[in-house]
Length: 236
Image 1: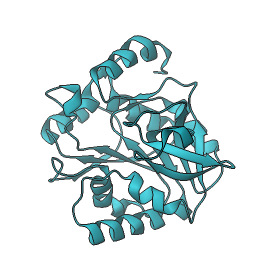
Image 2 (image 1 turned 120 degrees about the horizontal axis):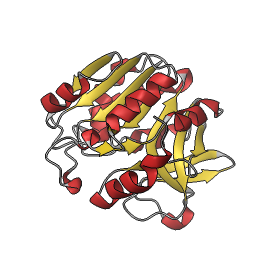
Image 3 (image 1 turned 90 degrees about the vertical axis):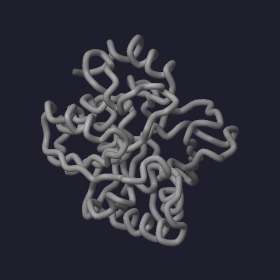
Image 4 (image 1 turned 90 degrees about the horizontal axis):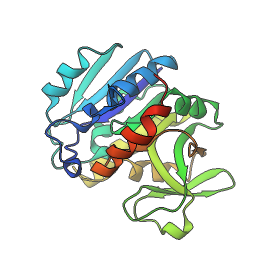
């Protein structure tokens, strides 16, 4: 099993002078926790898309366990997750996990993704969403739409930025990314644009992780919550 982790962004809103996935939460960096969680569920290869201060991040990762390979998004400053994942499309030849590198979670979240039915499963925190969150519309146990620009009143909750794509969904996702980028050019869109197009063809299962210690780190207050409230609940 493989994990594709997107770690190219600048994280400007957090105000750090290093990649935000290196931020410490409970004595371990965010990306360090991710690698430990993936390894615990059988991942043997971690593919990390890097960009902003990539050398600093690579040095940090030298001390962490696991088989790592890197893909460089040279245009990280002008693109977003859809382009980073497009660069990694060659890795999608079989089932894989997807994660944004700024998400705090432990192996229990991945266990739930593995237990979910269907060719793809996305971690979702149910609840009221604002304009900033990537939202999902759910009906009859499947995701119908995903994106930032959805009406919050119609949404089940927030996509957390961690997913499992099975054999059936991996190659169609890679093909969708290729078509999207080749038709639109280099864009600053989120990868959910491509996933949204899969909703009509494949069952994308929302996995409720609202009771687990997990969150996406976008702002200083998110990091404070992760350190003060989530860290004591995280598995090592």
